[in-house]
Length: 183
Image 1 (cartoon, one colour):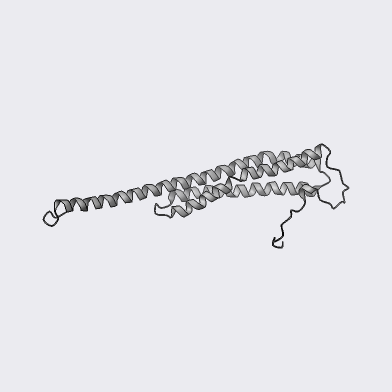
Image 2: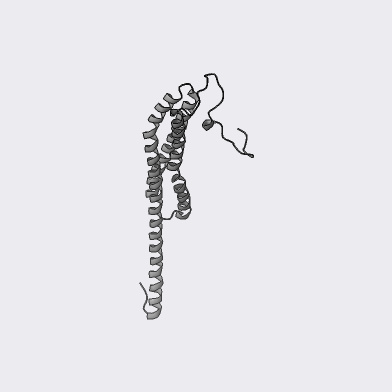
């Protein structure tokens, strides 16, 4: 303990206040780390929720679109296959992201309070903003397919002979830009 003969009353109070301040700083730091941990968990949970929302949309709408495509374009199996592959790829990638987000939850829970939360949070915020675009992107793609289907069902897409090699405009290769790397 403190030796009363060496330190005066004011010096003991100064030393005690320094010790208490150090304890307080450490407590504040631990609370801040805990807050960062909670924020990281929230962000990962939001990514998982966005993925689940997109998965539900794709799972619910894909069978109907596939039936309508088969009815509208029986002579164009490449259109049907292209749409099926596109929807399946979106579903697969979104499912992988959702599984990744779920796997991060236990890692965050078990992480130390001394981890570098600032860098991790910055990356999680970026991931969250990217995940926020999944559902609108899926809706846009589904909307394009449904627009094509509506035109075909109304007879606006002229039927072409089976051996014809011209692609439907909505499904032609995209312009890759002037400086795009070679395929």
